[in-house]
Image 1: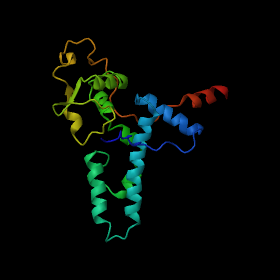
Image 2: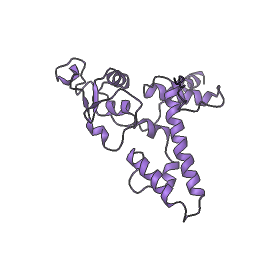
Image 3: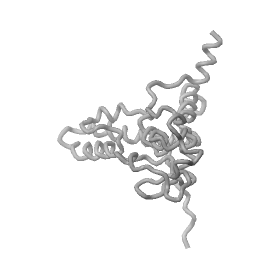
Image 4: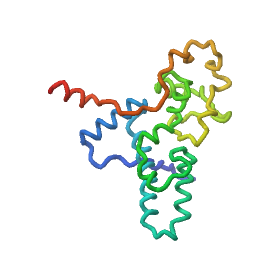
Length: 196
C-alpha cells in the first residue's frame, strides 16, 4: 500500500517577506487580475523565471551548441503565444509577468467578452460554465496556447448559453477588453501623494 504523496510546491515564495514595493506590486496584480491569492501570482512568476533562466543559460553556450535548446524554448513560448514568430532569446528576457497573466484562462474568458469582469470569469470557470475545444475546463490559472482563446464558449449544459440569460454580458455591460497599457497606481502611492 502506497503512502500519501505530498504535492510539490509549484512556486518559489519571495525571500524577504516585508519589501514595501514588492508587496504593493503584488497587491496591484492580485486586484487587477482577480487572482485568488498571491500564490497564484508566485506560480506564474516562477514559471517566467524558469523561462528566463533557460534563455540565459542558452545565451551563455557557444553558438554551435545552442541550436536545439534555443529552438525548443522559442517554440514553446510561441505555442503559448508569449512570443511572436521571429523572436530571439533577447525577447524571452524582455517578457514580464503581465505577459504571462494575459494568457491565463480567466483573463481570456473576460477578454473574449464571455464575462462581465475578471471575478465573474473566475466564477464561470470554477462552476463549469466554460468549455475549451468542447471540453469543460475548471482551472482559471491554465495558460492557453496560441489560438485557443477563439475556441472558448459557454458549456452546452450552462444556462449562460441562452442569449436571454440576465447575467450574460451585453454590449454595454462588458468593460473594455483590451490589455492594460499602463499599471494602475497603488494605494500606497496614492497615500503618499495625499500627504505631500
